[in-house]
Length: 245
Image (cartoon, rainbow, N blue to C red; front, side):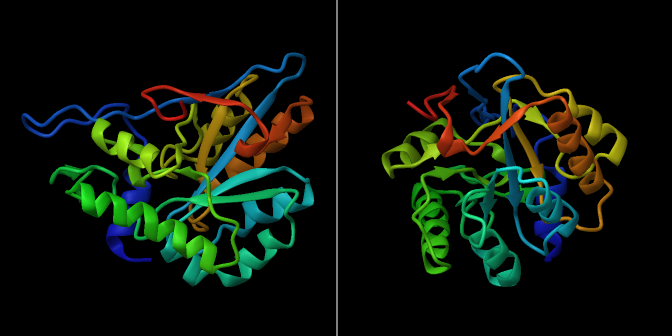
């Protein structure tokens, strides 16, 4: 995994708003499911930014029959064909969605986000989104319906463009692993505390990080409580900032 990709995955999702000098404020959208009642339901969304696969998480999802929505980049798809095959072999569990072609923030003005250069123009944002979708189709489809940009930060104008391209934008309500920087104990605590309607975000591409074990333990704790797991396409998700409607 290239250094800039490691930094991007590790530093993402630590704040809700980013500003650079006098530049316009970016937004980090939320997403929640329509409440179900009872023990409730949550959506597990896992980003596969680049690098390899955390098989601890993948195996736990398969073994415990926990559905998840996996946001994959074109980079990750090329490097992890065996993991893609496992996911394709379990269509009842895995929904693969668009995390961009090269894992570049979907911000259409030149700036740095966590020290990483944004796409920088409307044309570059469009390329990032469309190349990610094309990579998924090339890997066996179906065409994605959801998009989540690198760092989960967007310029409002980029959100409008992505929606016009036909994608819903996947925010979240529970930051499970702090960009994969958290330890196993804190990651477990955050995920296990998810409530009915929450959309959890974590990472499945950092096999050497302690957070991965916390993802597994947190999900197993939710399952023990009787929580139902759903993929984004199997539930009504409501996002703010014009991301879903």
